[in-house]
Image (cartoon, rainbow, N blue to C red; front, side):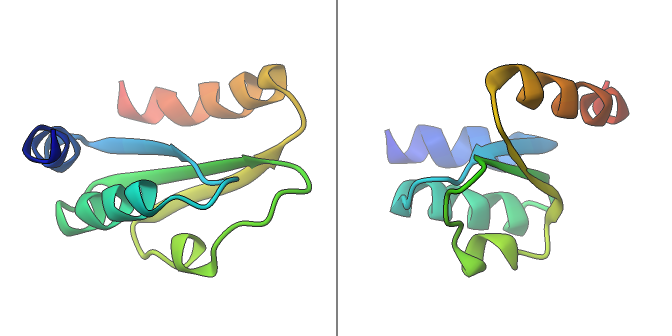
Amino acid sequence: MWHEDVRIVSQCDLLIAYVGFPSLGTGAELEIARMASSDIILWWYEGETVSRMALGNPAVKHAFSVCSQEHLLETLTPLLKQYV
């Protein structure tokens, strides 16, 4: 599984990551994406605490909190148009 995850993440142009809950796996994927020169979008729900390590990743192009899934889609849709 590790090899497959690394392969997929390292080949992506954009990684969208939920970072509202601490996860070593997500942190590893963020670093793999950075090393592969992929862009990263971070999101979390309002009121959640986000790791400064994740927020400080130089590959992060956008980082934002949302109050609902609808708000997430409204925020992501215009950002994703840059990658189509």
